Every structure is written in structure tokens, then in C-alpha cells.
Amino acid sequence: MKPRQTAFYGVLLFVAIALDQGIKMLVEARLPLHERLDVLPFLALLHSRNTGVAFSMFSGVDGLWLSLAVLGVIVFIAVLAVRTEATQMFARLGFALIIAGALGNLIDRAVRGYVVDYVYFHTPVWSFAIFNLADAFITIGAGLVILEEVLAWRRGRKAG
Image (cartoon, rainbow, N blue to C red; front, side, top):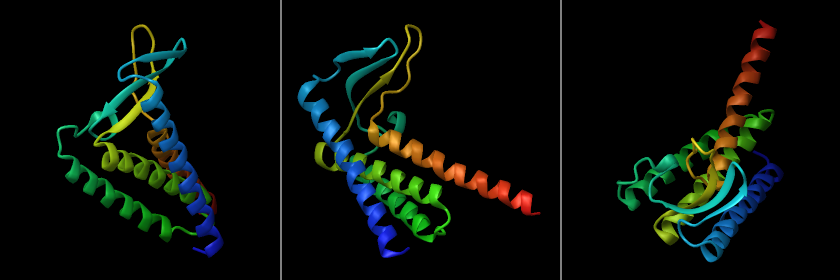
């Protein structure tokens, strides 16, 4: 990866992590734990704490082991990101967002001992898991990596 590209992804990582951590600090400071603030009929801010990973999976696992596992995943994703071709823009952007989200949640675990979650989609009869901006970055990033693969597959089919 060229230095200019590395700098772009470095700035993206920094901005994404800063946004994530800034919002989490605001939620911790302004919204009492388990208090819900309705924004739209189907969307609320709900201050929650997650000791696991996505959707509270592995919440019973010791924080140190969970943090080490997440760090291992971050290293693996970083290796994949470095190995992508310059033309794989969606994949590179996706990997950067995945790493930013994972680092944002890892910072929470290291500093607070839990991850701050606050986005709550719901209806009167259904609700989605509570999540945060870092989780959204991971999800969007994964979607971009998948999109890159689908586009490459389609290009390969047209060429063949």
C-alpha cells in the first residue's frame, strides 16, 4: 500500500474511532444506565452495557480472553487489508471500517470493562439487539468486503 493510501486509511480509522468514543462518552455522561430516550417511533437511544461481543455473545467469557481474541481478529483483518489490491477500493474501505469498529469496542473493554451500546430499533411487538456506532462500522465494513467479492465474481463471469 502506498504511503498516501496508508495515510487516508489511518485518518479514516482515527476519525471513526474518535466518533465512536465521543458518542459513547456522551451516552455515559448524559443518559442514565437502562434509560430510554425515544427518537422516532421505531428508534430510541438506550444506554446499555455489553460484556460480550456482537449481540452479547460470549458475555460469560473473561474480558482478557475476549480482548485477546478480538485483537487476534484485528490483526487477521489488517493482514487481509494489506494484501488487497489497489483496485479493491470497497474491500479496503470495508477492512478499515471493520478494524475501526473492532478497535472502538476493544478500547471500551480495556477502559471500562464493557462495551457501551445505545442504538435500539424496535416496534411494539419486536426489537433488535442494542448496538453502537462501532458495531455499525463493522457491519457496513463487512458489507463492503462482500460487495467487492460479488463485483469481482461478476467481472470474472463476464470475462469468461
